[in-house]
Length: 120
Image (cartoon, rainbow, N blue to C red; front, side):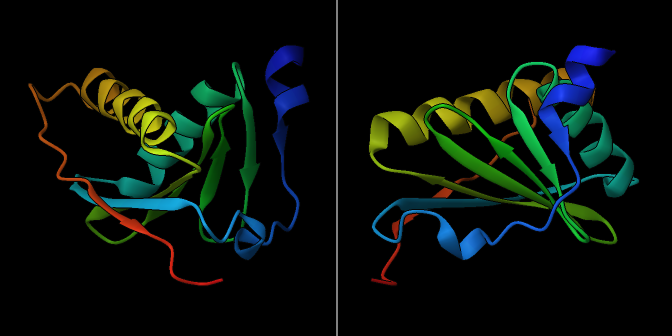
């Protein structure tokens, strides 16, 4: 439990501070009780990497980049950032595996939309 608490923080975090030249991948997953699922995923990832709990989302900070999970009424919205395609693939593949493992639905197909962040 102490390991979990060391990597989980509830602090303001400016998501605009992420590399403005980074790639951005977005996706939505429809699911019952999205807030609970974001909480479960955040706690799981906090045992391995840094996680920041914000007022309306949870940010996972991977070595390769980051992924912000935003729960809505009937879906989770994901916004992932990475510096290159290999790192983005590592992040989105990790999210895909965990979605399918934690949500216990067979083969949820997540349609990631990847683009270059134009804010410079």
